[in-house]
Length: 344
Ligand SMILES: *[C@@H]1O[C@H](CO)[C@@H](O)[C@H](O)[C@H]1NC(C)=O
Ligand SMILES: *[C@@H]1O[C@H](CO)[C@@H](O)[C@H](O)[C@H]1NC(C)=O
Ligand SMILES: *[C@@H]1O[C@H](CO)[C@@H](O)[C@H](O)[C@H]1NC(C)=O
Image 1 (tube, rainbow, N blue to C red):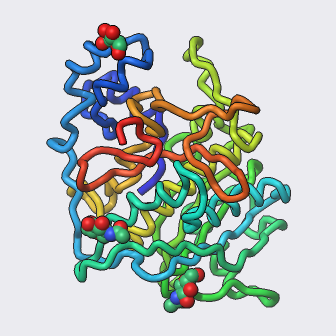
Image 2 (image 1 turned 45 degrees about the vertical axis):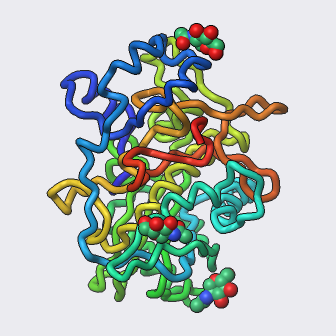
């Protein structure tokens, strides 16, 4: 459901020893080449925490719809956005369906999402299209939003007197993106983004939507990790963001997380784990913080490094852009997977 705070779940794991929600088996051959968190391959290999995760994860299909026809994403830019910041996020969205990009590509990352089907056996769509956009520069609902007032922002966007967003009930997704000056209920404390659907009583329609905030100046060490790291971990070193913008490069993975979950659980009655539909654990929740082979806890897993800038990334996008995007739960492998896995 929500992109919850990485360190929150990590510390719960460390403090209580309860099951972590995100890990994957370690390919024994790859381990030898990497020094991970100071643990030897033997230590990792013998740890049940990093393998056999399927015994804990019961991801179930609850019979609701998934997005099997063209998906159209409608960004709503709430607050102040620089043209380059919009370009980074738009380019990511445009990359999802461009299979001509050299691997590991954003489009190949979406293939894991496509493994999920509805009752009829139809897969999630390969076509994710960047649709009409709306600016809300004047912060129509102020600088402090709640989950419900975000729905009012969407209502304003689809009922605006000039260039309203289309009301797209067939695969339309509404993506409210807030700039750093905007506080959102639970932002930083518990969440970096969430998705849900709008209420007809507020918006007039039931439309899947998500919110993702720019954490720059607020909590990048929480929501733009690993491009910013918490000061209480003195040994941690921040990675360089591939598009030069800590806040926005951090948003890319949260946007990806919410899109994957909206496609597989748009009305929160399709694919999720856990008995409580108020707190579903969805296909991206299971892999939060995992971007490469060996990832789990505070370790991102094996990343690629841009030869010129030294930036960390794991996926190629259109126009030579690079992105760092978390992995997705693979229902066949029963662990998190992505196209930059070393054991493919
Ligand atoms: C790592 O790999 C090398 C060569 O492939 C091998 O000689 C060495 O024993 C391996 N080390 C461990 C710890 O497995
Ligand atoms: C879906 O998107 C593809 C590619 O953009 C387009 O060719 C096709 O006509 C669309 N289908 C529908 C039903 O809109
Ligand atoms: C569609 O989903 C099925 C079932 O998960 C899977 O076997 C198949 O590979 C998927 N097809 C595509 C194109 O992803």
